[in-house]
Length: 186
Image 1: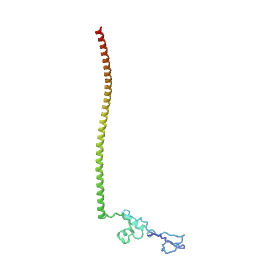
Image 2 (image 1 turned 180 degrees about the horizontal axis):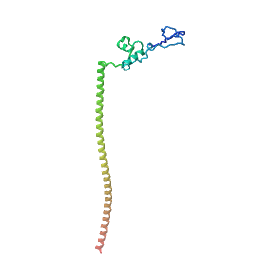
Image 3 (image 1 turned 135 degrees about the vertical axis):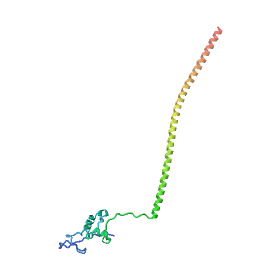
Image 4 (image 1 turned 90 degrees about the vertical axis):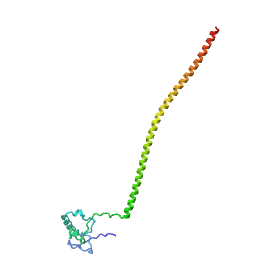
């Protein structure tokens, strides 16, 4: 559907302000606009909120033309369209059940994901506790390892000291043995 704008024109020689039919030939120098009541609507019409008092109703009727808005509200055949707030019709029962099922499915999936997240969070907390316990055990084992390494170093020193003492004892025994041979021979 295409909308073709119509221009109401007045003859060039006539200086009157009354409207002429659309069949009148137009002259570019004398174009005249339609009166407000006979113009096409731009889609902007008074809303019910605009017509909340009788004074406003009468004022709007004067602006729109011969019939008052009050008459138009009483007699729908005279009505100039009054903008109404459009409401969305209720959905069909099939659509409502389909949307309800989809909502339930999404809710179930959300609950499953929530349970999974809670389980994973608990598992992570347990693993974190295990990791902390293992870290404590690791530090304890490192400290005992350092103590054992120190003990090994001490044992090696004691072993070398023991070997030197054995050597010295063996040397002393030899010396004592030679001295006692000399004394017995002397």
